[in-house]
Structure formats: C-alpha cells, structure tokens
Image (cartoon, rainbow, N blue to C red; front, side, top):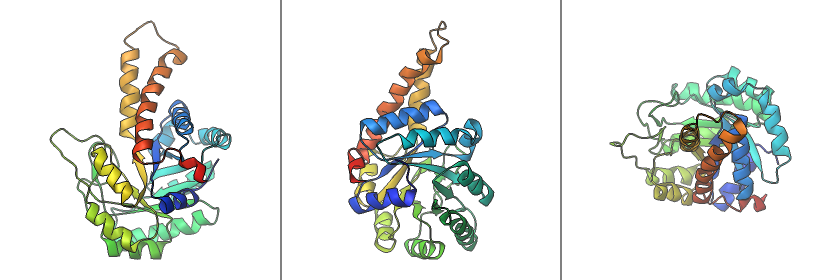
Length: 284
C-alpha cells in the first residue's frame, strides 16, 4: 500500500505512535525491512539517502514501488536529506512519494525559501515534504552539523506556517551515527513539549541510534511521529555478514545474505515495538 508521508503520519500523529524510517542501501535490505514490517503489521517508511540512491541507482525505485504495491502494510518511499532542489526533483521523477529537503545549516530565511520552493513543486504531484530546523550532531556521516543547535519552538511554528511542509525534523539532542563510548546523548523532552504545543505538523527525530530506549519511548509518548533508523540496522546486518563470511567456502548470496537479514530484522522488530508501531497498519 503505497502512500505519501502526509497521509501516513496524519494517522500516527492522531494516535501517538511513531513510524520507523529505515534507511536501506540495496534491494535485499529493503525486502528484509518490508518482511519485518509485514510480520509486525506496522506502517513503514523506506528512506533512501542521496548517497544510497547513487549506489542502488534510481531505476531500482520502480522495483521498490512494485513490491510496496503488493504489500498489505502502508509504506512511503522517502528521500532522506536531499541536499538541493535538483536532487529532490530527480527523486520525484524516479518515483519517490516523499522528499526531505535539508537546508537546516543555511540562514533561516534561506531555509524557508528553499522549503517553499520544494513544497510548490512536490505538492503539485502529491509528494509530501519534510524540512529540518535546528541542527543535530554528526558522529560519522555526511549529514547534519558538528554540534547540536536546538530547535526554537516559536521559530518552528513560523517555519511550518510559512513553508507549508508536511512534517518537521527537529533537534532535541541526537546525533547521526553510533556514539563514542565517552559520549552520553540526552534528549530534551522539555524542548519537544514546547514545540508540540505550537506546531501541528508531525514531528521527526533523526539520529537516535545511541539514545536510551527509555528516552526514545518517551519522545514517542510526547508526540514524535517519525524516527529515522540507519546505523543500527546496518551494523547488525554487516556484523552478521562478517561472521558468515568466516566460512571461505560460501559464495552464493542466497547462502550468505539470509542470516544477515534475520539479524537486521531482529533490530527492526525491536524498533517497531519501541515506537509503538506494531499492529498500527490496521488503522489505515
């Protein structure tokens, strides 16, 4: 069941759960995430970063669309951290149903103008738009800034109203990637509460891989509706692959990849349950 983000997150916002946005880097990982979502009867967002898209090639999006059309669970194909208007348009042409334009490191008025331009183009073809305000930290990826700049609640209200975006990624104390052992992340639920009071659009949490489960669960209880997961599922997938490849006699993907998918799916199951998304496909 293929949907856009506006349709998908409206239900999550009304019922206080979060839809997991799993970043996939190949069709095998995508299929595993769809299987996990179907087994948990959970809505799902298939997130693809521009770097991942250049790896799998835009033509694969048509295969992803075909698989989702056959699925009983609602799903979105989402461009994660689109860096330019041109990247967003290319994603729409490839078949994405949702796009993120990330101009959060630009001056505020430039961020507003960029999101307005993207919304005008995307909404014309029923594609939803995610914007970002504030800057989350960056541990080991090409996304975000080096330091956390918390989202200002009143600026968030102004931003959503002026841009027309369908959901807003906020900065409340997370970073992209896996945290070093000496770094202890902590979510600012008080900031989330203040934003939720004045912003009606669904809220998005990026970079929560190393935050405590209790903090993530609390963010869902307090109104976050979409949570991005990338590092955790990839770490599980490739850790298992390294173990499997210790057997140097293995060379067929249908022998190597299934155990890796099962390891990845276990992480996906845990996230789906943590976000209270299990069983929520029945609401659509």
